[in-house]
Length: 130
Length: 107
Image (cartoon, rainbow over the protein chains, first blue to last red):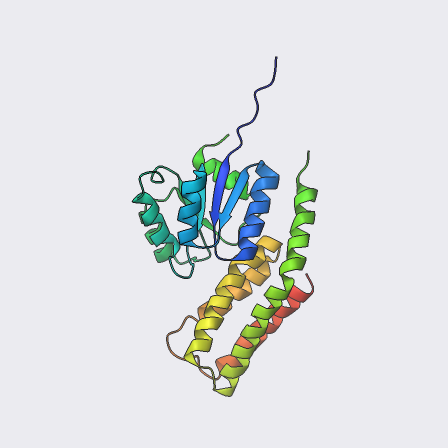
């Protein structure tokens, strides 16, 4: 009997910083074996999300142009994307910022700098992925 | 398969690729600290320094430079004031930035 194959998750990373995007992608691909697609702006992220229909989205907060919260609200207003879980990624550590982000309705707020060794486990735990 | 050595090696390659960018960011912070000490720091420079410090704070720790992220966050806070930082702050900004450069160069 064949062993059941592991589910390959698809994650969209939206971040304007090349280094963050590449470290996160590398981490999720090599540690968890997930498929990663990326975008470097909120607008590109929404377009990529519609093309790729990822299982989850990792969304940077501070981006030029459309920031993370605005991008999230636009996704929520887009019927095809509204059900995709979104995790915000931020280097903002002030409690007031954190409360405001949590109030948006995202699945979780993850903090930069993240540990590339454990990022996938953090995401999996939030989303209940075994 | 243990992915840790593989990931560590790949992260090292990424670090080498992004090191020039990190050093450019530090150079911008050094210029801002020097301008502060000289009393010539202007609003646009404060804004740039704040954004640059924020970027470094968010990334250095992922390259195993936790102390670097802490220092960059200190700079981010110091540049987050609305008005021009006092000239006396120039020495503190320069000292933090110098430590940051040393950490990055000796990683």
